[in-house]
Structures are given as structure tokens and as C-alpha cells.
Image (cartoon, rainbow, N blue to C red; front, side, top):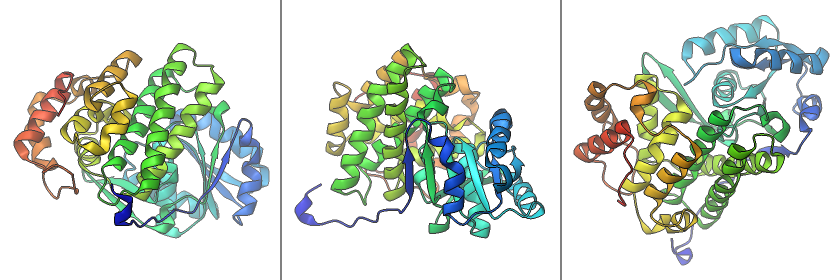
Length: 353
């Protein structure tokens, strides 16, 4: 974009606590937001970690709710709200990735309670005022200041046990946020700088994690990159890529990070434009094929078929994707979207757009 044209930038307020060992500061951060009884949130997989965190918090912990699920189902939120009330909680501490962070946001959206996030993946949603939730097979999104967590704690040590495959797809998910931010209608020079730096950090960090999952420098670099990419997501509007992911996640129950990882090379190719030249240079050429090669080399999933989508689902997915489309730099045409989905379904390398 031409800086002489002027721009508007709304910076989302959030306190970021970054560094190895920063988990020890959770209790202090709960106190800083005025919390007395925190409900610790997690997925069933991370229940033991949540219980250990609650024990660390001592009397500041109201209890644990470990039923967070992908795509933030409204019925799970209702159960969490009931537990929040029953335990007399006054804030939430979300320990985990996008599913748990989404649940914390859903609670705060409904009752206005303070949120603290302890991020253990590279989702990036912890620094956005955006809530995506699913009801009756449809995923919808809402924005608002109450949705944005007040405090985010990034402790690279907590990501050392994140499986390599999940690390890769989570990191590609974060890259997708930044790619869309580069051509967003309301982009500006500041968000574009953050997007490019976030993509660069993840490009450098993810291969290191694949080589050595215990590489603390790579783990810290990935968290840093995900924070930047997530901040971009929360500052500017999203386009076709996120519309497709919301469609496939909400209506076909595909896993969130893996779906983003598979689609981003194809949506980047579809939306190829000069705004992506800086990101393309990071991958040695056209961005769509470059991202596909990067994902392949990392061992990421490449085909929607491998996530359980059926070929017979593609027509319905294309129909849903062109309904109420998000703004996009290239017209969203049903035939072209159907072709994009077919390539992604088969795991084919995209063209150069």
C-alpha cells in the first residue's frame, strides 16, 4: 500500500508476559486483574496440566473445567458457564491452544469476566478480539472488546512437549493469519511489518522444531512468531482463507489447525497479488507453491481427504463458501472455489495464481 494515502490503526490492548519460566507468574497476573477465584480451563487432554496449575494457584483457583473442544461448541460453553457460577469464579485462566482459548473467550463474551491465557500452541487467537463458535453445524464469528484476553503468558518451556505434528500445523495456522493480513482491505504499514516478521520467525523456527523438538531457541521463535501473526489477525479483517476454514470446520467438523495448514498454499495462490511479494520472497518464489513445499518438507498434511472430508462434500462446501463471502482481493467465484477445494482435497501443489 502507498503510505501517502494514510491509514488507520487500532491497537488491541493486552499485557504480554514472554519468557521461559513465566508460568510462575500466573498467580500474580490473576491478582493484577482483580481475580480472587479463577476457573482454570483446558481440554480433556490437558486436564492433568490444568489441575497442576490450579494447585499452583492455591486459594486463587476456583476449580478446573477440562471439556474445551474444537470450534467452541455452544453447548460446551453452556456447561462451562454453569460451572463458573457454581464455583463462584470471577475470572478464567485458559491453559492450552485455540480450543481452550476459544472457551475462555466465550465465557468472557457472556459475562465480562477477566481472562488470562497461558498459550501452549501457536494458535495466535489469544491476542484477538474474535470469537468463533459453532451451533447446529454452523460456525459464526463475533468481535468485541470483552472477547480480548487481558493477559497472555508465553512460556516456551510449556511448548517443549507439544508434539511435532501439532507444532507444525499450529505454526502454519499462524502463518495463515499473517498472509491474509498482508492483503486485508484495512491493512496498514504497521500490520504488514508485523505480518512479515511473524511469517519469517515461523519459517525459521518450525524446521528447527522438526529437527529437535527440545530446541528452546526454536520454540521461543515460534511463540514469538505466533504472537505477531495473531496480533495481525486481531487487528485487520480476514478474507477467503478464513471463510473456507470456518466453512470446513463448522459444517464438516474438520480439525482447525490442520485445515488451515492444508488450505493456506491454495488460498495464497488464489489471491496472488503484489501485497504478497514480501512473503513470497521468504519462500523463494511464488507464495502458494512455496508454502506448499514448506509444508511438505515439514511433514504437514497436504490433502483434505486425509482429514476425513469426502469428495461428495466438495460441492456443498463450495456452495457454503460463496454464501455471505468475506471481503476478498479477488472475486469469490463458485467455479474457482470448487477448483481450489478439489486441489486441496487431493493434496496437489497449487499453481502460481
